[in-house]
Image (cartoon, rainbow, N blue to C red; front, side):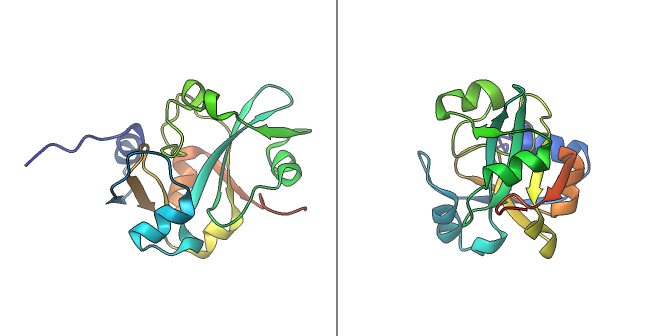
Length: 160
């Protein structure tokens, strides 16, 4: 049996004794979260994407929200205590996070950036997030995920 090639996200969850499941799917390059949910047969409303934003102060922020919703930049800025934020440019994702586009997990980035998870995650006992590489999804309890990421639950998708 081949040894599982674990990602930082998996190692950190295991170290924190957080139970998770893996879903693996065939994919060679970036596809969006809606297509990942459909390809893996998981509910879209429980599937969350991980975005990274840069604040006016120069700090980075991790935003975890449902794949079918769009981040509301003013709401997200207020949630993380910034005057304004903008999405991180695709070319900077790997340098800032250590992950590639489409494989960006809220767990195990180069640094533990302030993290906000959209409040709808609390409606579920498990959510689906990237496992830290393209082709890997982690199934995890949202509250346990928040503990590992030191995250807060907030509204990221509409004006407050």
